[in-house]
Length: 316
Image (tube, rainbow, N blue to C red; front, top):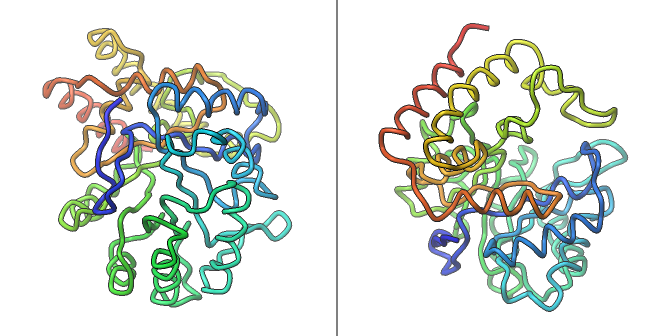
């Protein structure tokens, strides 16, 4: 496994991280608690030290609780990340990044995770109803108290990051990024490179779509959120599957899987610190970890770039 600095925090993180949204069981089908625990254990076994969860992953903290069980006795092997600022009201997600809400959530997350401190505490999403300064100062206070070791944001744009950084250290941002969604290349990645802010990208395989295992005609079970996702139907799906067909020869050249090639391309992008990959089975973790420790050639990177941009810019 490869490791990189988490911004200026002093922490070092694996270039492949484990995302723990799927194990919460919301919008995902076929989740098994024992298999999820096995996946978490396998991640640590293969050197994946960055584990990312959130207060709202599950209606009652199911993801954080499971992570807490999995890392018991192995806490020193983990860079533990969770998020605040979102919570469930019935079936609706509510944004609340107020100081009061953050202070409530951090205590509950610490209990669920069975730890005295959180390595990376992140604001889950920008809250337009709360001044950024209030949110930043709350996290800064938690840093001073030793309850968190580093501060991050998720889904923040550059102006919001600038406002946040005026009131607190900012060590990371967690945005979506993959071969189909490359918007952060314009402004966010250059900004983070200039300011030594780690970029922890989520959806590098876009909910499994870019693994190539969901071919034409695949039908997800009822209750799976991908049934309603536009990327899994119609012309967007066709373009994506065509793109994957063009990428397979590169995977063959490398002797790697399509998943590993796409993840290697992702972690090789300037400014990207790590890719957060969801997994609910230990074999998924092993495959994802196989994206580290080798490099695509410059020529292969160029070909992937061309194939990706053609797929993204194709007419609807």
